Length: 289
Image 1: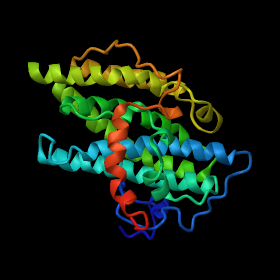
Image 2: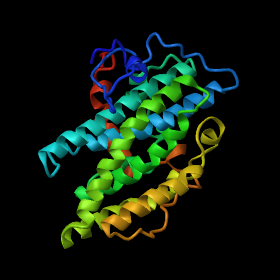
Image 3: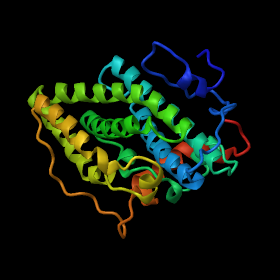
Image 4: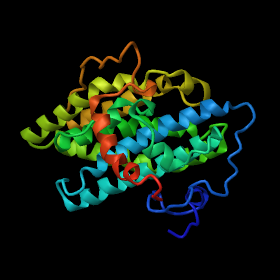
């Protein structure tokens, strides 16, 4: 890309409705005024950015696992691009988190050298495996929820977070549309494709309630996820109707003492994902990635 750093990409006027970066080694917020605005708690802002970043980082890793496994070549490209979009969001948000709390930690430190209990992603993002219907079910739920959040974050009192959200909205609009089209295609297709799409949604649904459970940090400096539940339900109802699918009614997966992903409590799948994602950086801690 022609931009000197990633932040220029989210502020530059462009006809492109989507963006992705993930191959540059420069600090994404280099040269950007990252002073925390008056009235915003720096520690809480940093914690909130970590939550959003971890959601994107972990989901991005899950999507890249589908490279060479998608049903069609164009879907190989689409899924890879969605993963890159989320990786780009993660890079910006991790950098914002490090600069907000003045810890000196960069995006690599936060991505590769935190332990599982320090990650703050929702548990839905860490689910892997299954067939294509499982992937589409998880992506539909994740993208619909995240798009609603970022649309509201465009008015964040932190201008950096607002700019990241504004650009992310354009990406997530495509992510949601891609997942919705496949949901309808599978749900209203053959008997087998309908069965698999319903199974994918059934598998993801126990993790939906967690998406709308308000964490104190979200209430303090971000968007209360409970406030977007109505929009989420309305969008999915339209998709389910077109796809001739039934909205799942499975009970929510319980946390541990009321604690879930936002509190650092995760499924066993995250430890395996991090072991793979962090292995090279930890083997060569002085390397530049």
